[in-house]
Image 1 (cartoon, protein in one colour):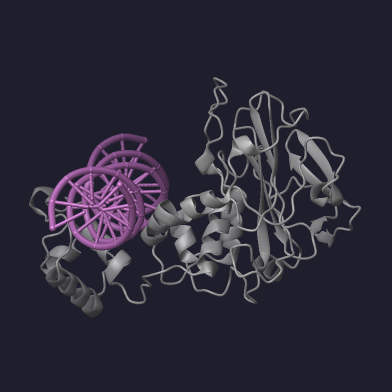
Image 2: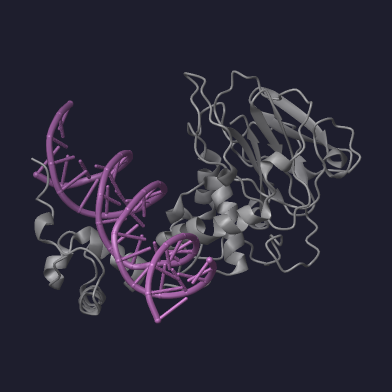
Length: 336
DNA sequence: AAACTTTCCAACCGCCTCAAA
DNA sequence: TTTTGAGGCGGTTGGAAAGTT
């Protein structure tokens, strides 16, 4: 019953790889490949290592075309937007960055990029509080999010006014008078664009903002069964450089943030440039994940899966390929 | 220069899914 | 149908390197 035993764990070497081990592994794989069997590989290659260790060493360090060293601004942006979309699914993120490994990206995020973004964000306590009523009933105990990918310019909104969709419904450019429809499953919120961007907006509780930014969320942080909720954590939030305002409020222990991407990049060479690159963030690189896969992952990247009614809603334009390529991620977090 | 602290990252650990037996 | 291992993944850690006092 079951498969053959794994490697003799009591008799395998651990710790850093020596140059000799590296060359043995590299030479063997270059000559014979992995054979689809990492467990058997170390013995064949003359290594006293666990197959898992060999796999990791090969994938993260020895395989060809591994890119080490500084991450570019473009890579920063891509990591940020994908992290905002799908969370810490490093292998998927890595698939969109040629030459980068999931481990590299994970380390980079944990040690540098997260701090970099945090340094740009104002402390939550400094943000204005609102008197606006909660938009989400207090019975909602899940961390919820509404995600949309909006083309950089112009802004789009679904023509059928329904954002409850995981598909890419038809979109039309919004005029300055067209309300944005922000939706969670119980609340449809209409917001005029000028209410988002005007400093003298009349919408109580919504603070004006100018420039793009991004918020990040962790996985579910509270329970729907017992109603307990942890407060939003500072490290769960990141902002893109270049924002001037964020709008958010706190009410009845709920945090609400409303974020919006701007198309005005102004040519600044910084993180606030989202999509100057003609080929965009997706689609130009060979990876195991196609654009459709990424869309699907984004559309399913919630707590409970694609079919849950509290789903993250994801939409884009009919011209999916091109529009998605220069899209930005807009996150709305409700109720932590 | 030494002691201490912080940062960085390679590698390990443990969990999950899938499939072989 | 059940058990078990392989492969894959994300979280965590230990120690080296870099920075600070």
